[in-house]
Length: 263
Image: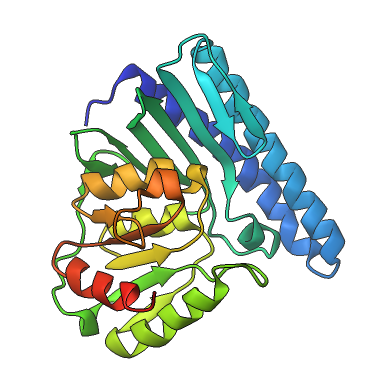
């Protein structure tokens, strides 16, 4: 796909931040015997990646707004905003598990127009622009799976950290879904789960409590690959309500029925 100038900026910025994360990741295995050191090291790596993204994206488009986990800065152009996470999957990162992502979304007039989810450890760049399909690395178009039976499907999910308000509902979800499918995967990175849905590696996923920067880029990539995406409850909007239920169009209705029957 011949991407826009903005998409090219996003891909370049994501790769640069990813190189920084990979460099620091090589040191993280040596810190596993000291939990505090690993936590602090991962936090510093996340800040370095975030600083890199902020510098590159604001440097390229100084008038755009900017939102990341550290906060939001309004831009001179009220119609455009970067939505960014320098290190999604930080818990994986600090445990030396090579499954984490850099995410960048460009919002235009309230809608996500361009999206990048980069997995530095595996050198996989997922990207999309509205109406242009979803892509992986050098112009490999990706599509959701065609599996049509729940029993053949693998679904992604996220277990809330600690005792959160969504934990009881999530446990009910797990009890209902597990007997109906081929397996569940909790990878520790919702953006990569959605990217894997786009590439047919997962058949669906759900999450009851998500941040905007976890969903903004990846939901566009998944939808451009043919996924159906809604909130966990009917009427919810993922980017507004922080919940997501997504699957290929063959199993979406059956999957949604199982998840929603727990509420």
